[in-house]
Amino acid sequence: MNSRRNFIKGSAVVGAGITLAPNLVFPFNRKPATDRLKIAFIGVGLRGTNHLNNAIHRKDTEITAICDIDPKRIEIALELIDKAGRKKPQVFGKDEDDYLNLLDSPEVDAVVIATPWLWHTKMAVAAMKSGVYAGLEVSASQTIEECWDLVNTHEATGTHMMFLENVNFRRDVMAVLNMVRQNVFGEMLHYRCGYQHDLREVKFNDGKQPYGGGVEFGEKGLSEARWRTKHSVLRNGDTYPTHGVGPIAAMADINRGNRFTSMTANATKAVGLHKYVVDHGGADHPNAKVKFKQGDVITSMIECANGETIIVTHDTNLPRPYSLGFRVQGANGLWEKDGDRMYIEGQSEPHRWDDSEEWLKKYDNPVWQKYGEEATGAGHGGMDYFVMKSFVESAISNIAPPIDAYDAAAWSAITPLSEASIENNGEPQEFPDFTRGQWVGRKPYDWMKAEYGK
Image (cartoon, rainbow, N blue to C red):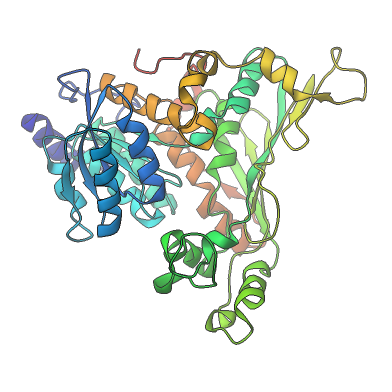
């Protein structure tokens, strides 16, 4: 184990800038000595605790370490572990860099990273350099340079990472993916998706509870309001694209026979967050003087190598019901999530929508058919169960996961590219090819298989 770590660290230094074949598996790549994965968690806030809870209830895991700079979150995590009858893990969190000591522990095979966005790439890179299989929460990266850091480190070390995008495992999404694979929609042409979610009570709270109750953020805020809202103050772009674009990328075979080639983006003016502060805190509240840079509705258009287009919408600062706005359209018909409707030429009544329920039942993904009941209660309608299942099983077998470093880079690149396009009046931005041409020969991932480590 120690020789593996030393080899990886040495390779990361001498191999910097050297391009290796994608999905290369080094002969020194570590594989757990048993069928139980020694898994650690960096960040045990609300999201990290959800992952921790799902890992605890698996028979193939050992929780060996946790890390957080908030003592209250450590206390909550330890109590959860103790109630499950699990052994107390090592605890890290004496300062912001203590996660590096966690990654050096010989008792860690894999790590789940669920921290504020600006820490994601550096922590995932450190994990891969330590030979630790990394699971990274969304979004993966904030700049194009960080996107390349993930890819380059994966290739230089041979260590895998999985991007933990849970919507790819949503039941209706996986059923529609099954329909795409079976050519029900015909040749694919157009997709729409996004993140349309009223986050005003996430971006602001009273500093005592994580959701709402006040208009504080930053140092006076709690949970995501402490860090997430600052992005809306300082940045004008789609800062959270992957819940929508991840499932669409799987359907469009992005990085596996297809790729994003270019995109444009435009933003409306910023009104919603200021209005919320005034409405709930008054015009004299200090935060009423804050100028928010992020436009309330941001629309990006992506072109693909195989000729498809994708519209991605970011809408989190205004009052609205939740929707990821999925539309999947081919030459024979389409599915729209809003309205839960389907139309397939020759099978639907002409010019009349079908309720999508029967279609989704007919093409229910085998993954859900086998494990749907077991997934109940895992979080987010059960899809978090499959995120942890795929991560653990892939890590135990030390193989590439369903969503890899190339996917994390391509999907997350939408954020900096949208910022650049908006800054330049909608000017088209070229997508980097993070696979360095390998997308041409890479085969689509088999999303229909129910076991991930085989």
